[in-house]
Length: 182
Image (cartoon, rainbow, N blue to C red):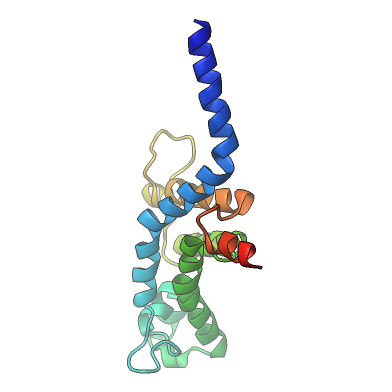
């Protein structure tokens, strides 16, 4: 029995010592495997036409970000102002840049905080602008139904990102490499 207890203690002592390396690396891997392409595909729907597409968001960007405003102007984004353009542009670029920074582990904590903010704004837009307040989509914590898009899934996304906020990007990150070079 003492051998089993010693093995248990040795294993979990080692895991505890390694958690600073394992948890953030696993969090970044999980983010890359599950969410990187989700956000990049979403960002691609916001890119406008032609060479200036990265500076001129598509109508789809405005519909996704400002659904009520677009409905009010008959889905003619040219009737929206500079504020709408700037927010759509920032949102589009954030969906490209922040996920890449998280996966690369560059400015890990700040990029994870940025992604958390993005997810909160995305969720608020889904609830208020896109009618995501129906119980199936919105969901509720502790309801025994683990697959609602907003409350359940996005809590898991944010939890993965909080590991990076708390622990940093981990040893296999550009933050760590650049820190060693400095």
